[in-house]
Image (cartoon, rainbow, N blue to C red; front, side, top):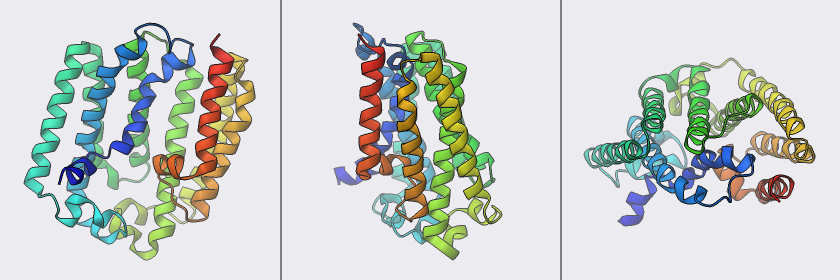
Amino acid sequence: MMATYLTILRPVQWLKNLMLFFPPFLVGQMFMPGVLITGVPPFGALCLVSSAGYILNDLVDRDKDTHHPRKRLRPIASGAIGVSGARMISALLLTSGLVLAGSISSRFLLLLACYAAVSMLYSLLLKSVPVVELFCISAGFLIRLQAGGELFHVPISPWLFLTVFLLAVFLSTGKRVSELHSLGDMAGKHRTSLSLYPPGFLDGTMYMTGSAVLVTYAMYALNKQSLIYSVPLCLFGLLRYMFRVSTGKGGDPTESLLKDPLLFVVGVLWVLMVVWSIYP
């Protein structure tokens, strides 16, 4: 029973919340005294609020998820957890996360409240609007990034901002392409927006944003100079993800990173290269 309730929190997706630590990590402050300890409560608050959003999303999609080969097994869609119980858990997580955020700082609370608002609007309304849904997902990543900059007093580079924004659009588009290919004629029943995109639009968007990510990251790396040698890793990661999507191996960014050995190795090598380049 506990495992079932843990599942609806989607703890694997908490990896996205590590974006909170990107600002101090990329300026060489990650291992300074107190940085990690300072980041634990905000990370916890973000995980609570994001899990509340995931539960709300599952509640809204519980009927549509029955048309998906894997999502139909989720606790809410399968009936393992009742609707009223899921609502209570979501409300409790949201309240707890915002209260914790308020104890950290008013600006962090504002950013987390914005994240919660975007997540709720996405689940209740905007996820059915083509293109807008992609920007909603990207907004979530940008808020995480800005929250990290606020917490650790690190200015966000314009090139880093653009890279994160475009990467989020690229990954969310790739996920949609994967769903479209895997679900076929049932795609529109699972996700309304998939039936509204013109043929080839999502593929073109994925290629366009992938190219833009490479350019913006290269500019960011040039400003850092020592990171320029990580650009080939960036290109390999982008191409590998597109290969996964195009061959039907799945487009969920978190699952791709954890289940694809090559992408996982690229991620580890990138972290090691940043540490080697920036840290003494």
